[in-house]
Image (cartoon, rainbow, N blue to C red):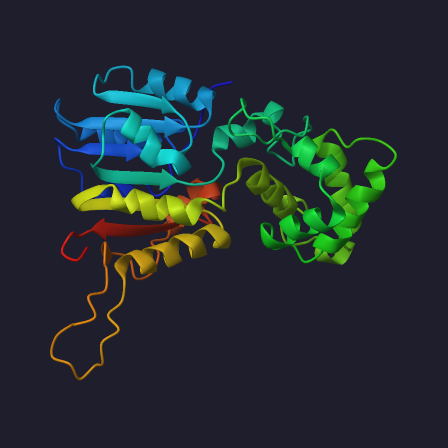
Length: 313
């Protein structure tokens, strides 16, 4: 299957990165290279783009799409380890980092990956197919309490208790192996009258995917470490697709910016608070109405930008 992924908030991301032709830029979730293509177009021969992805199929597709560009380096890895990945390449500072979080269109559309609640497939949901933990293990081995916590917190699902209980009840007789089996359990766990707002399995599938790929726990530290790797004036540009991600990114940006705790009547700051830069987006940038109409997967997207400033360390 062709790796298709329509980049979300493309123009806003490229403007947000404020690309220097000779700079070093990271696409921490290169995917189908939609954003990366526009980044590398703005680089000179001295510039460098580093594409990171945990999905080997994504890297393969990115290499094909960017085959005409010689100043691109590809790394199979997780952006949560961005510091170590770049240190291994002999790089300690960069001029911009883009993180497009969440699952890609290709991963959703490729039914064998098990991300979709529309297509029937084996319960998988791994972004990195080399890792051991998958959705089948989570669904069949986590306790009822653990499942409830995941579905409630990561999926913000009102009926998490019912869903967790019914999963455990069904798996007593036989292992739950497919997405369709899980969808049917979820549908039976939610009152019909409450199934009008989108697909009833959407939140639970999101929750299990987040657990399988450990998308949230390291995110705060990833944002902090990414910002610290930027040169003066470098930009960290992050796209999120659900409220839990967005809240985490927002809080990390606030902590990076820091806050003066001196009394307001003092003429200058004496508290020596640490600031790593400035938040450039007081409110997140949202996709235009036109983009939402042409790319339905952009509807929940939010973009936040942080600029590194070295004045107070």
